[in-house]
Image (cartoon, rainbow, N blue to C red):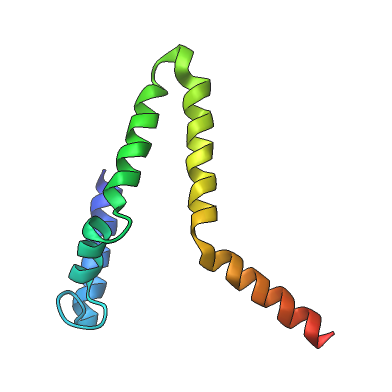
Length: 98
């Protein structure tokens, strides 16, 4: 818990030094607001991970919980289409230069 508070403090200090807490494009406040009210809110994913983790505390349900957690991680990777776009562009540029 102290590490979490320390990281939170570092984020606030860096944003404060850059003057990007409420001003700037994007500001820290607008980014946090979009995480909870945007098109794909963060709280839905956090609730899913917490429920899957809670199910994992039941010994007989642990394999099912781990399977669902792996599925959530796969969805995170596949849902972020920017990763695959960057990989495709990297391979295309490498192929065209050789």
